[in-house]
Length: 136
Image 1: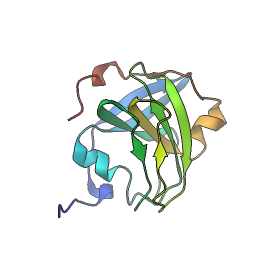
Image 2: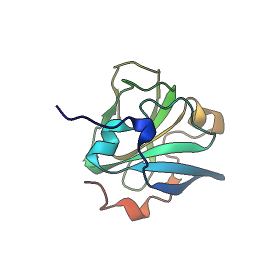
Image 3: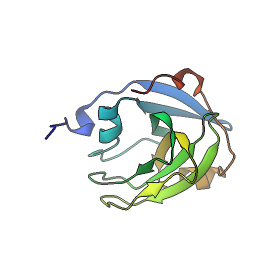
Image 4: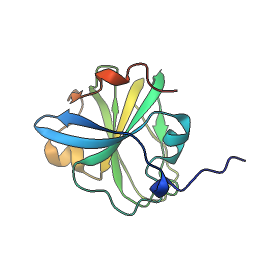
């Protein structure tokens, strides 16, 4: 069994993304370990902050909320950063929330962020170009 540090104690790289006129400060989970930790054990996340999951290849990736204390919305993104679908996720559940089609990225934000800003399927997230070969 692998022992992972508490997510709240892990420092992940941060990048700037854009969606429409909004700037997002996103922690980047590009390694398997960081993707497994995600936002677990976090008690709050500031507005316009999120977590970008970078996957090694496009697949119908799924997310869940085990040990995650915050209600979140996740947008699954294709290679060009276009939103494929957005799923709302409730804290501390093990329900699967999956990409509608093969996704290269997932962007988690506070619950309702995408809906409140009017972003949905087809909206492009900017700032992803440098992540094409980064995941491991």
